[in-house]
Length: 277
Image (cartoon, rainbow, N blue to C red; front, side):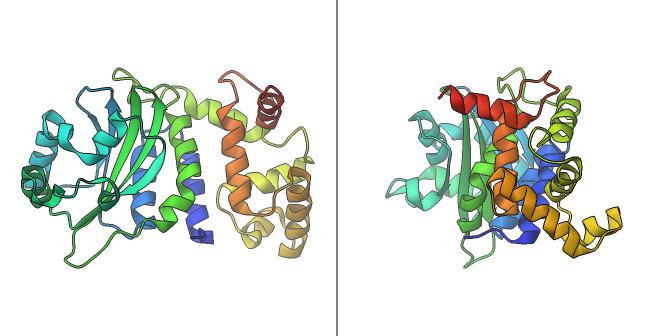
């Protein structure tokens, strides 16, 4: 399912939060909205160790107790944790896709799911290494509701790129990666496209990445929206892309290959990585 313009604007906000303490809550809320869900829980998986809790919007005492039980013990029978343990790669999965046939009759389901109040769930797994991954549990709680993961699946590659840039290293000792990434991101953001685009084209694309519309950019520069659209089309042509979604994807791909101390256009690092295969 195609992402809407509003979805892309919210994803742009997530990109701006890379390296900031607000990133976990911002991207979790974004994923939850994409699924039209009500709850989200972000944790980190490390081999067979117990998960590390990173963020949740659950605030009821009984749910907090259930999550503590999950992190201490119940995770070992979680179908999503089992998927991770078996080497599952980056994916958006519904519980019904991976759960055993008698899962709903299990004690785990009766104890944990009832306490959580979950009616349906999907999970987003982003793997960092053989022994480390981030996991988002996204749930609905109203009777009769079903999770809707289609948009989340469409956004999955971009979400994974954001998470992997925020947590450049994911270990039990480094689950809060808000060090100097904000400054690094700002430098890479300012240099994005500089090797290919004119200064004005670069400025316009950076504003698009932040979620600005053509009308908003026109007000900033004192131009007409039509003039901004001409600049945008020219810049897109130079980058061989056709949409805001492709622009976001290109920026995140380039960011992935950009060293932390680089002052160069991230596209140069992406081009170099591709040339090396």
